[in-house]
Image (cartoon, rainbow, N blue to C red; front, side, top):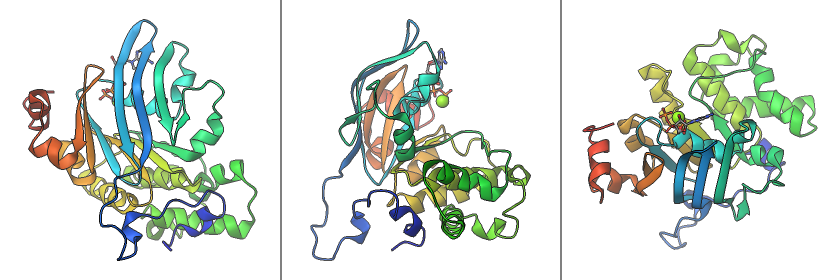
Length: 282
Ligand SMILES: Nc1ncnc2c1ncn2[C@@H]1O[C@H](COP(=O)(O)OP(=O)(O)OP(=O)(O)O)[C@@H](O)[C@H]1O
Ligand SMILES: [Mg+2]
């Protein structure tokens, strides 16, 4: 068992076994199971259509990168996956967007339960103005009753999983706002993981960070990908190539092409994709 799985497993359905843990006699390559599926998905802000007829499958327990020029609808898509657009009155959507077959667009869908399953990390680290400990414990206290000892364990495991424990273990009760930008972003990843999500959405999580912090977040994403389904938006092509297994290229609200990251970067079928990934436009 992974060091940080223990406290999560008491409270969330057991995750399917990772392919990495498959016994030696298991079939070598199983088709990836689908976590998220958009089918004929459209999104609007008032009369402006930001996403057109999107059909895209996002497999479980792997990293999918969303790339494309500014304004092509990447964040809009992420925000619909955890229903953050509910807060924008002009935002509307049609078509289907499912997580394990459940329609996320259904008005009656339990958004609080959804946000436990789908965590989000933003471009700018946004720790709460609370202690490092309380940043992690906050979500857990909201969703379930835990003893002090269980909370302590959850905080430690989450911070270890986000590769920041050693840097903060002696200052857990100091304000999270005193951390560097890169540390704050890892704290936000720890906070997102502490409620035991299956999916982590990351919207340009490194764009406000220096190269060293970026490298540590990328290493973290690679470590986490056998545990979580990760969808990352990035403008950094090298980053998409380094961390993701699938890539989807968007342009002006439409999906141009998606496939394995290797194919999209080395042998895309579409000329526009090739021009974008090689830096000739966008
Ligand atoms: N709250 C909003 N109200 C109206 N239009 C919006 C809103 N949010 C986004 N849009 C528009 O929807 C389109 C898609 O925006 P979105 O934020 O999804 O793009 P993006 O691909 O994430 O871009 P970037 O790479 O710059 O973050 C853009 O034309 C944007 O101006
Ligand atoms: Mg965006």
